[in-house]
Image 1: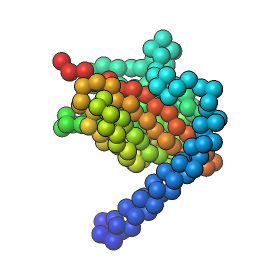
Image 2 (image 1 turned 180 degrees about the vertical axis):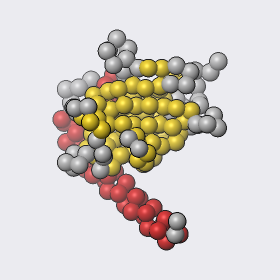
Image 3 (image 1 turned 45 degrees about the horizontal axis):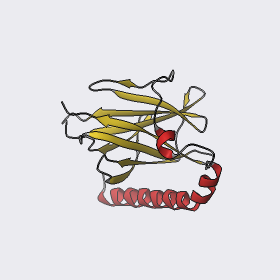
Image 4 (image 1 turned 60 degrees about the vertical axis):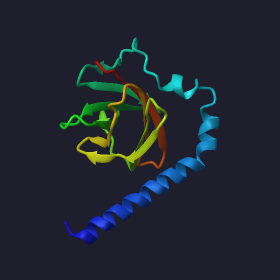
Length: 164
């Protein structure tokens, strides 16, 4: 691939992310007022294991489906082949059809409180980013996505890493 094309694509992606983040900050007051009747974010994001959409978890599998503003959002975590990190993956559906997103960003808050944010890159039907989730404890996984109608949607789940 041409070096200038790579630089241009990177610049466009950076501008898009900055625009999405800036728009998210501008809507914070509106979003807070809109969701003031909801429980706090920790309760809102915790997945109820008694729910029919209970998570599929195991040594190498983590998949939770969650409703966010009428969209069915799948949160999936997989170890990388190298075993040094994880792929944080998100897929968005509505009425059984996969939705192409206008933009998607992820954020992880690690057990020690450290935070990371990354743009989710489209890979087939999934949007992915790489994170090191090998630290023992509970990681908060969040997604902010923008749909074709220009609306932003936010939600997340917890991923617990236990050392043996």
